[in-house]
Image (cartoon, rainbow, N blue to C red):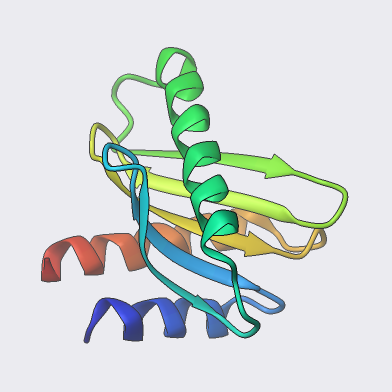
Length: 120
């Protein structure tokens, strides 16, 4: 399964998910994204920059024994969920509706990331 296939499957598995993206915080790039509507590159770049800021902030606050790291950003329009394996630069970004359940979404993001990292 390709990265694009994994992202499409992940987005379709989360009701109302607008974007499922795979990025690299060190390169400051969203490498691949799945979305219905046209998504300007600038918006993807902004999501990547936000993910980088979130991961820096949670590194000092998180459990040093944790194998994964996640951050949730709430805006007036959506919920942004970022997940990555501890210490890695690749991550998943999920742009979800405000009523989604992060306790259900985060494990799906981690599973997809693990699958993609294993295939990479």
